[in-house]
Image (tube, rainbow, N blue to C red; front, side):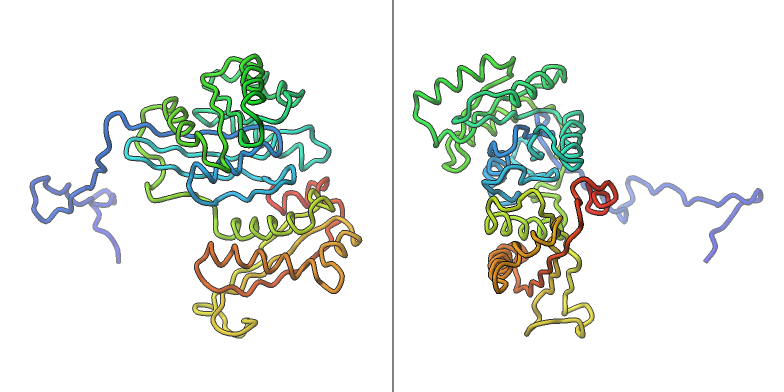
Length: 336
C-alpha cells in the first residue's frame, strides 16, 4: 500500500483531528498531586552491610538475593516503592571494596557510575562494625558529589542501645549527612521512617515507573541470582568469589518445542550453568555423589517456582572457565 503524494512527491499527511470530534480517542493523562515526588536512591556501602536486605524490606518483597558472604551483589538491582504521593526507585549496588581482581575493579566502577545518576544516596554502615578505612574512603568520595546523603546505620538488632548510641555518634563525626537513620531491616524497625526521610529529599516529579512495578529485573537475571544465592549458602566460605551463574535457556513446553522437555508434565524448563575457575572447584560444587549440586538445585527450585508461580524443571551444570574473574573476554561474556 502506497501513500498519496503531492505534485513535488512529498507524502500528503492527514488533517489533524478536530479536538471536538466525538470519535476522537481521548488522551489519558494520569492524575498525580502537584507535590508528587519521585527519584532514584542509591544504596551504597562496603560489602555485607545489609543493603540488599534493606532493599527487600523497603520494597516489601524479595527482589535482591541476600547472603552472609561478602560481595553477594554483582550488579545493580532496582526496586520500586510506590505510594500515593511518591515513588522511590531504589538501586542496590555491589559492595564498594578494595579490588583484588578485574571483576572487583569493574564492580567498583559500576558503583561510581551509578552515583552520578541518582538523586539521593543512602550510605549503609552496620551498627556492630567499627568505622574503618573503607567507610572513610566512601565518605570522602561522597563529599564531592554535592547530593543529599542519608547515613543509614543498619542491623541495629545486633547491638545494645549503648553500642548503637556510640555508633550513631561515630557516624555523625564521619561526614556531613542530610540525615542519620538507624534501622533493622530484619526486624522492620524504622524502615518506614527511612522511607519518609529518603522521600523528603526527592525532587518533584511524576512516577518514573508504573505504580504496580516492584522491579525492572529481567526474569532470567532473577532466576540466575536465585541459583547463585542457593550455591553461596550451600558452599559457605569454600568458593563464593569464584562462582558465577549463567542462565543458558528457559523453555516453556506450552509454547515451545515439546521435544526438548525433560521430566514430566508441562514444567518450565530452566537450564543453568555454574561457572568456576578450577576443576578442583568444580568437584566442590558437585560434592560427593552430587550431594551439593542436588541441594543447590532443590533450594533454588523452590525460590524460582515462587518467583514464576509455576512448576519448574531445573537442570544445573558446572563448567570450568579458567580465571574468569581476571579475563576481560570472559567478563564481557558474563555481562561485567
